[in-house]
Amino acid sequence: MWGRLTTRERQARRALLELIFMTGRDPGLKALASRLEVSESVAAKLLSALERKGFLVRDRRSNRIKAAYPLSARPTQHQVTLKDTGQRRYALCAIDALGVAPLFARAVIANAKCPHCGRSIRVHVEDNQIMAVKPAGVVVWYTLSELLTKQRPNLNLAEAH
Image (cartoon, rainbow, N blue to C red; front, side, top):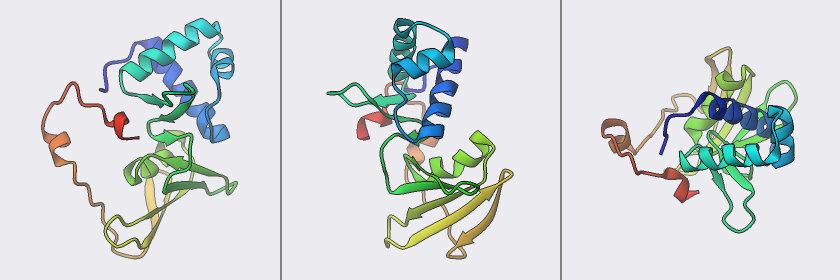
């Protein structure tokens, strides 16, 4: 997972993320190909490379994109609201939700539920800063410490989504 991307794959990933961010859903192969100014077959190969390297997840039956890290094309419990428009997008986890603001240079309100007690958490992120947090004193509880300390080349977190 998280294999190195070629320049073209990096461009495809960015275009895909922007399309999902704009629409909140899988943009489809035609839209991606158009955005990249390539044929649909080239776009399909780029998507396959991104999937192989762990940057996106597709539905096994429909082949539609379920997620392209950090965004989900389907509703999740990690909601991201664009502050200026009120539009909702979804992230794969609370950490990903916090990263949406700097990734797209947009002010967002990340809403999630505490995995321990179920209480609602709201974090306003703007200009690469956390502007407000409710409830006060919220901290990140991240239990995948092994992933942060050990190299695991064949680990694929996408299988869980």
